[in-house]
Image (cartoon, rainbow, N blue to C red; front, side, top):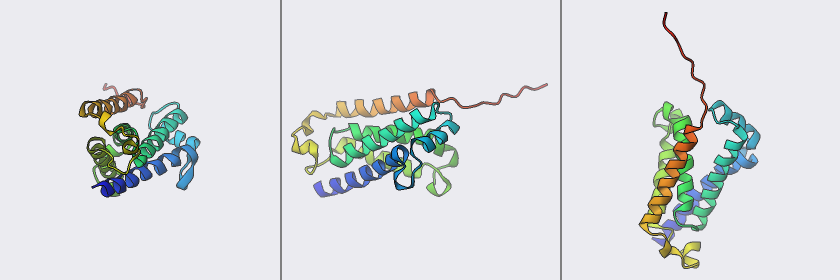
Length: 169
């Protein structure tokens, strides 16, 4: 179990770190803050650079914490938060399947993050090395996940999309 949790953490955390590094630094074929910020503006997130940085930091931070097994549910909650915003702002209108640009991959990231948030990181983690695994009660885990959901929905609430109103004559 410990080895399986380590592998899951490294895969999920590494992927989210890399995805965030694309936004923040332009690494791994990404567009950096400026390019990602331009895209964020087209989605209604203004100023785009600020939202690009926030998304990138959420992915990098969530990915690093999860990969290292540090901070209990905090890293997975950051991943959940960013994935909810991605689903609602980009992927939901395209349906479920990733092959159509849908939210399939995002839901799998949420499922993996939710599992790690509640199962824990296992013995090969910094939480275990520091002896802090017992501070992450189920109540704390639910608070972290709940806060992630509230913050994601708050992010969507400040999104400024253009709406064309039509009047009938």
